Length: 180
Image (cartoon, rainbow, N blue to C red):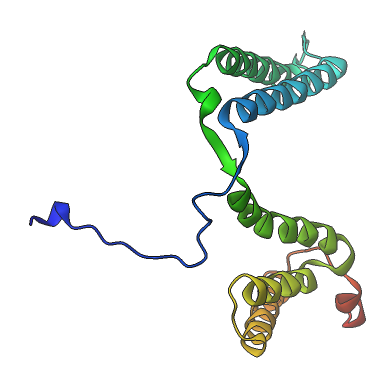
């Protein structure tokens, strides 16, 4: 057997079940994303049109280039929408199953909560919670190892950004308590 015919199979015990029911198909996702991008393009186009898309005596107004970028985005979104509506092949292809979506949400929800927590707790405390939480819940790593790793990482980032580079990062009550 040649080297190109060697196949290594790694069994993942946490892999989604192959018989998991479908949540949605590719065509629905393509249409939804095209409509969302179209709405974004229209919103950006209107806002930039409102601020000015013409040339004045000093050159282009502030909305000139962003407006035309939003026109390009709207055109691409329209093309994607028409292509998705005319597509027959992708209508039956699964985009995501319930088990796959569950795995994606296991990462998305904590990351969204991290972004919200960062507004109130600051970057370093929110990072500590995110890292420790991921290591414990997703990685199934011992609690003491997870907490120690998250603490070392958060302290190292605090020292790097706040002390070494003097970069202003979002701070929460703990940092204010420490005088930063």
